[in-house]
Image (cartoon, rainbow, N blue to C red; front, side, top):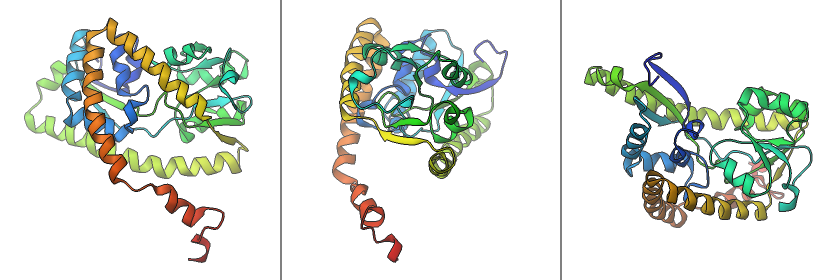
Length: 288
């Protein structure tokens, strides 16, 4: 796209991590307690948009980027047996991408950043002991249930990832203002539609993975989640020292997250109580 061979493309920002580590801040890691939609709010209103343009310019990428499609928290991944403690992770041959590579390497795993289409076959051949990809629907389509019946849910390694639509900047800049506005609004409409559809589709596949594919889901132990946060802080500090743009983006995210997450924690009611009221052991939903 940058070279103009293609007019545009679709992908994930974090996949360009090898060209500029700061791109990881649009998806890999805990996002400082923000969810993916809050990270998009930072991007649009908190300075992220301008920082991303500066970042792409720093590597000579002639692109106009539109992050969109906030992804829900991704699973820790698929394993041969449930992970019950931090020590269970050490030594495993594991697939992930972006700054998550550094985090899991720090936890003692042997990490391989295989492309999505190669993960399941690698697990089938024993080249991987465990792997993560994205969500219940895409993981099911890729065939994870054929090579593993254990999936660990919840993780901070990709808590707020974004998709991306990009265009060749020269071609985009040459468009009439009206067409630029149409594209920008179409991206945001697609982002909303993707978010709503994901809730419907992921929840259906989550049920069918258990009922039809006989997958067992387990919550990732808190000790592993806590260690992810500690290692992320160490990695981010190192990257910020090496990369001024990484440090600048980090500072911007922290300032926005402090304000936005405090507002959220103080304002948004905990839905767990309502969930237990309707769907818990003594839930009333069946009586309604």
